[in-house]
Length: 477
Image 1 (cartoon, helix red, strand yellow):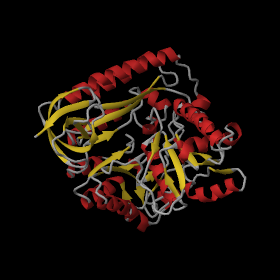
Image 2: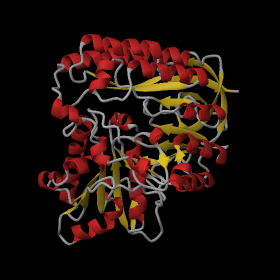
Image 3: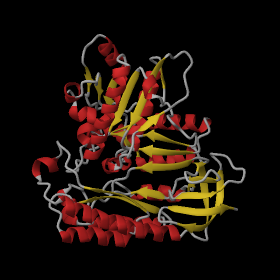
Image 4: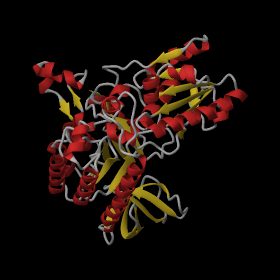
């Protein structure tokens, strides 16, 4: 979500479901790994293939077509997908007519290697080529290799109405940008998803209107870097400087889109992810302050608390600039929750630089965090120019210190809600108790409370009585 949010890959792929479309006879098993953008892309794929006669199924053994939507941000994610392909191979021995495809970032990065190394893979499709799936399936049926990983300068899928897969009917993702221009040295996203381009705000509002009519209560505006959103009639963001004066005068940036969305749908909650510190404007923060229905939560990846490490990562901000932005956020939005992405053991990281990360965390005291040990990704500048020279044992120790500190800070943040009443959007039943609801407040904290006649999708006022470092516990008032 900026590109850094993508490193939150799921421990297990999510097999996605949807309602059947009358008349469709073929079955699609769709499994998605990685970030929220990947989940949203899977919804786009399901929509495209629904028009080709496919309904989704949660039973792998019943599928005519199996697609796995992949993530390349971390080595672990790629290894997980390889393991899943072994599972598909076992099923394909029983059902040899079943076709298998690899989608997403791994597809773009490894291209034909999948067809050569994974003998069960029939088609390989990159993130900008999903419209070509029907044609590629025809190639497969004709016995030919089917590969399309070409990146686009225009594709946003803005006219595709996503099929809401495995949805709770309460919250949904709405993609507003694709690609990333920031070229962080550790990140493969610019190479797998291409350059930044933004979606027409008219189609964004139309999609949200459709969700509103369907009864959804919350939407999340998505992009590798939502703060870079800039619509001036189409095209890459980098070409904006050459646009006409009329296009520049009528351009819509992210703060304006956020304001438009909040005004158009005052009864819906609005979230967004992911922000990049170098691109977040104060106008975005002011829009959040102006509208009660914009949730008071920002995912603000920093990756390291050391300016020297940030420079090696090609992050376009210093430690001091990041802390200044945090201060401005807290001045304008005192009740805003913040979360981080943090990488332990990046190339050349010294103990002093690691301590800088811990001290920055102490300054900010994040509500939540997504923390990982650095893993080299082929094709990135870091893999080409910088030795991965921090020993694994040191990476693990530093990562553990970061995680433990985040747990302490998370508890401090959660304790601030105890004794207060918060508005909770009910998303479903608690995993630990059938007698309790779970939902989230504006600050994205999970809230659990006893059921008393409410329904999924209701808003409830909950008095917080206790907490853990990640969950608020209360009762409805």
